[in-house]
Image (tube, rainbow, N blue to C red; front, side):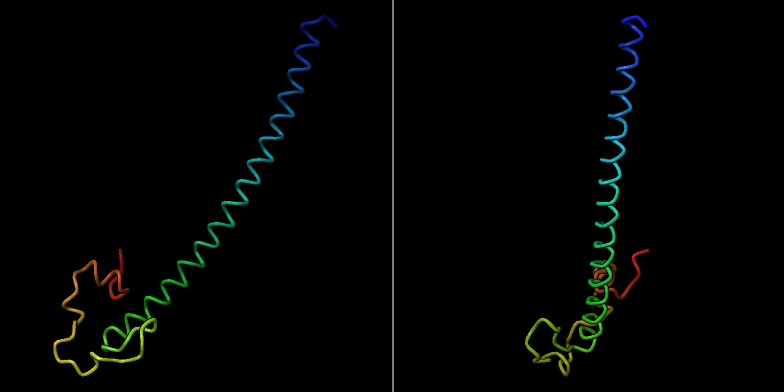
Length: 99
């Protein structure tokens, strides 16, 4: 075997090893991203559930769960109603679908 063939064989081994290293790194990154997506999905579901509970209280004029239970607007005749909200406000309060 001449020097060129030997160098080619060495280069192929190096590339094969680097390729395997990249595959392992890619798999680790891919696993990390999958785990983050799962966590984001859980967080989104938790926030959506919370927003829906808050929307029901808002419509009744009741105090939201993260405020003192005073319910000032339950009998207030000029409280904000669903029709007073913009489309964006309704979406943000989960009272209207985004799509």
